[in-house]
Length: 175
Image (cartoon, rainbow, N blue to C red; front, side):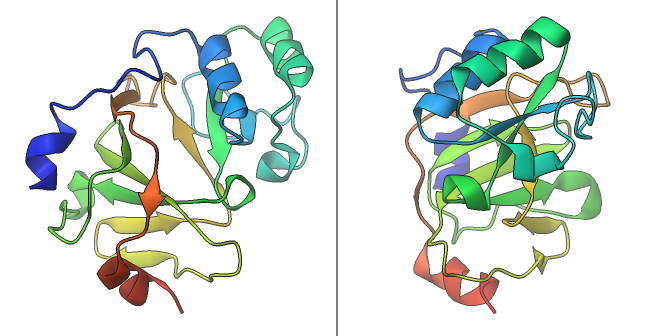
């Protein structure tokens, strides 16, 4: 069921064609801590955030500073800081959209999907669910509208608010 919904559902909270600065503001306004990434890469922009995801912020003035310094930055979201866990499905590594995943905020990546779920900060997640599905929790993910190293643009394909991790996935994913 999810595979059918993810490709067709687009809500109204975030415009898919919004610029990176506005997207960073939108994420910050949701309480999601953002960080600057190097242009067309997934690596932190260490000139702007020496502590990588630990430097992530929701402060609009800081976001302005980053974009004034380098208007071409990509953006990332610090998962744990933002109360999120992201399941990173990479098709090239054998990842598949499992039927246990329920529709939630979803971003199309360079070669797969990022499924964003609410996470209790006291939970401890494994680094990997299965082959081709990594769990991003303590670190960060690059997000829309950033440009993947392959040249593909990260794109929001389902902008509903993240939901709680489905119980069957939670039991599998936590330590």
